[in-house]
Image 1 (spheres, each protein chain N blue to C red):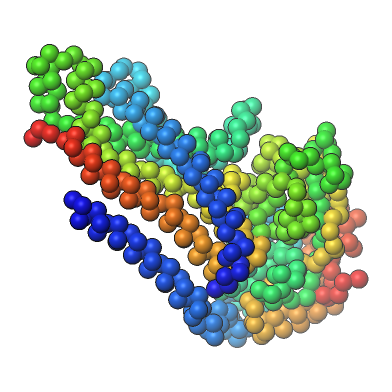
Image 2: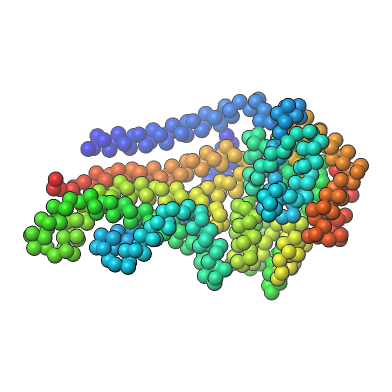
Length: 219
Length: 286
């Protein structure tokens, strides 16, 4: 392994890490927002919207991110919708993640015992108050492991961004290998940088999970 | 709880360390470099199949036609190699950036994917005699033709394909030009049609073909950088296959094979005019 080469490539990987994180986090936040809205629509059984949400979840959970990105980036301009590559990346990630997040949150909401809602109502809370103060905090607790698994999944999915010309970690490695054929160095750096990005998320998730357990009561 | 957290953290640090140690280990050991990743001519003949890496999306040099068969200038040559070796051909579809890798890991015996000979690449693989000439070219839409690299503004982006000579050339000689990189020909082509970049830099054969096949595009810069050649490549050190290929190319020169190849595969695209500029016969560049 050539340390000189590694030193030379480090700034490129650093830039790629920042790009991956930037797009990744926008995508994750968008996914959480979409997921929350969708889960609530399902929970409150809002007509029409409920059907749309189900169709959306079905569509995005059952097509690969690669296909979704291709569609957003290459097909939409044909009908006059032009988006920057970075925006497409975040949007694609957000839409994919939203479908997963909504399912995770929905299952979290469903795992809160029915008696919790009944108890809240018997204390005089209305439906909104029961959701906001009793059901939702517990549901989030239940969902945290799933949400974090989704976050890590989404950050790893950024590796298909090369198709839409984004120099993420994966593409940077492939590109450098293509130009200078320093395979071992490039792939080693790639593994290290993915770990730098994802290990803290895993650890943070673990701490968060422990902390949020305080919201668990009943049963 | 605290104890478990500490356990978790140390497990994570440990796994991180483990991977680094592992990688460092194979760095110094380099996974037994003495074991060859290639097959000799005899081994190929014995197995009855030769693996040849070609493009599947670069018309008219290497592409898959509407019947699902490989076609093109490179592929025509590949069929001849299979015939003269007396073996079946297993075509392996490659991307530009994979070509060196595929040879180094023994996934293919020969790369016949419009592979331009460069000094950097020659350090990693062995090139046989050339069978085609090439330079770089830049194509742009006819309503905004780029005839000189000075016309490219600081915010403009030029489309290139990752792992091609166009990319390396522009990175080295014009680092100030912003490149928009794609990993396949198909993606770059669509992106260019969608006008995601002001121009597309690639082998001039490729951009000339693109401008001929698609209306509304002009090759503003038909020749950029040095005049290079395209040759088959084999895994570094595979002398038996390399010498066989060189003899084959010389022998094919006797029967003007590559002119025939041109007429079968490239004539429809380029017409008669480019025949003598593109074709290299018998491995001798004029």
